Amino acid sequence: MPQPEIVPPAGRALRPAGLARRLVLIFAISTGVAVANNYYAQPLLAAIRATFHTSSGETGLLVTFAQVGYAAGLVFLLPLGDLLERRRLVVVMSVICSAGLLGAAASPDLPLMFAAAVLVGGTSVVAQILVAFAASIAGDAERGRVVGTVMSGLLLGILLARTAAGYIAEASSWRVVYVVAAGMTALLALVIRHEVPVHRERHDLSYPAVLSSVVRLFLTEPTLRRRSLYGLLSFGAFSVLWTSLAFLLAAKPYHFSTGTIGLFGLVGAGGAGMATLAGRLADRGLQATVTTLTALAIVVSFVIMWVAPHVLGALIVGIVLLDLGCQGIHISNQSEIYRLAPSARSRVNSAYMTCYFVGGTLGSVGSALCYGAGGWPYVAALGTAFGAAAWLMSLTERRYQRRAVATAPAGT
Image (cartoon, rainbow, N blue to C red):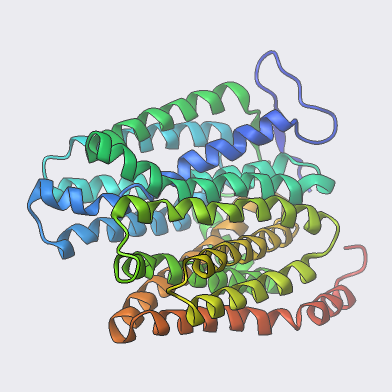
């Protein structure tokens, strides 16, 4: 198998075994900054609506356009990580994303902001390129830990983006949020350019061949399909909660303000610690155990929030359990899929994250429909169903792994 080209930055040397903690931390922070760019708009919609004098429905399309851009990035840009030199790809995409954020800040009307949202959404998949990048240059014995740490940064970026955007907008304006985000993203490009090694997979595939190989990998790798389904179900459950939670917290008996609701992102950030733990357990070959326990945590979390939605302590426990469960499954999934095709990790991640994103979309739409039809009990029932499906599937995981080992070609 052709070996990847890995060249350290000028004046630096790669450690002979494993990644330096400093470099892992850079990957984690960079991933969080990159993914946050796709989530700043959510708490700003009311302020943006007031600026442009548009309806809630029209303004809400801003999130939809960002999701469309992100989906396109997963399909068409993420596989480029296996075709192009990764450090340069990350830097270029980050610069383009920064320009898109500045465009959003300066938009004179909503249509131009839609265009900026598509650009920012598409280039924010640089976060997924960074995850595959870190997995590729990590050693086999530490890959789970490294991916877990980087994914902790990604989770914190998703959860803290809403809180940061809300408070910055309260102190100044929603446009300042995008200016600050543009500056952070440009700084990210500089840090990556200076600190991260050059890395490129050695193969002669064309861009069309890279795209078609994503489909082929999905069709020929049963573990990828299985783990993609786990991802779909877990992120579906995650989206079920976060789509409708604001409605619950704004109603009686809570009557929380927008700023207070945003603080619940900090509650969910407790799940970031599970990412590193799950990665370490995966390095020890305990993926099946992690998958079963974390899927069960999702079920328990929604049962708690179903039974006692108006007890603040119970709600907080449910949120923490849900984020622990979702992150545990996600890290277990990625630890498994990155073993499948070492020279195609960006393409493997493209297939997996596309299914993951589909799950999030299904969860968001289903949550909104359930809340409109029957309020919070319907939402909790839907989340429980997503979690239960993942848990029941996990009960067959050890049997699947034994069968996979028994049918694997000799020498693999």
